[in-house]
Each structure stands twice: as structure tokens, then as C-alpha cells.
Length: 165
Image 1: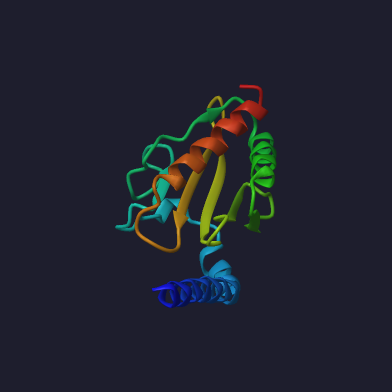
Image 2: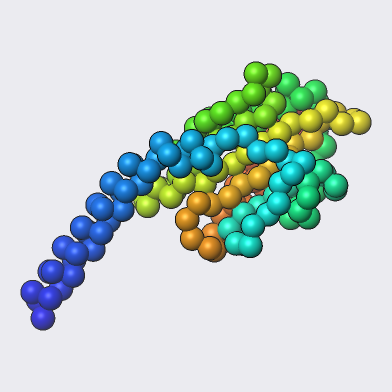
């Protein structure tokens, strides 16, 4: 029985190492494919529940999970506050940005398994300030235990706090 447990443990460690090697090799191609900015006007959600979309009504083809907040600040201030929030997050980096920085995509990796989740953002001027459209999605799996929703809500709440709201 002891030998079986040892071999099972060795097998699990081997799978863990193989997975990390696979993710490391795939990182560049995943970031190239999933890290592009999103066209929110044509965005259609997939069938998997491991995604979360925040947008104003009518801004996307799909029904958003939550309505985008309005910040009483210009788009550049919202961009700077949100980028500061993202920079403070663990295992997170911005991959692609438009010239004005108001459209970008970031990747955040889970701590243990290094699963990449991609978060695309577009900041728009609206009456009364600015709004942030945010689309967070997981690459692997079907369920995400609300990780994408919690991330978006946390980032938007922290952005609001940074703006003094």
C-alpha cells in the first residue's frame, strides 16, 4: 500500500510539473490570441459561465451581467485609477493598449495552477463623467466559482475609491 501511495504522489507531482510546462509554453500564443482588445459593439458572450461582462445597456450584442458604473471623472482619470488598481493585483499585467490607453486587455494568472484569465476594458466618456466596459473571462474550464465577477467588482470598487467616490 505504501508503494502505491508513493507512486501516486510521484504521478501527481509529475502532472503538476507537466501542466506548468504546458502553460509556460502556451503563454505566448494564449496571450497573442486572447490578449487583443475586445470590440464591445460586436461582443457576444459564449455558452460557458466562466465570464463576466459589465457594460451600459445596448453597448454589446449580449446582455451584460451588470450595468457599467458612471464615474464622475474624465476618461483619462478613470484609466489612470484603473491601471493603478490592476498594477497592484498579483500576477497581473497589461498586454495590449490603444494609443490613448482607454482600451486595453490584461491577463491575471491564478496562484497555484497559473490559469490565465483575460480582462478587456474600454473607458468611454458619458454624460456626467466616464464609464468602464469590462469583460473578464477564463481560458480553461467551464465554471470559475464567480472569480471573474468578483475580480471585476473588486477592480471597479477600487477604481471608484481611488477617484474619491
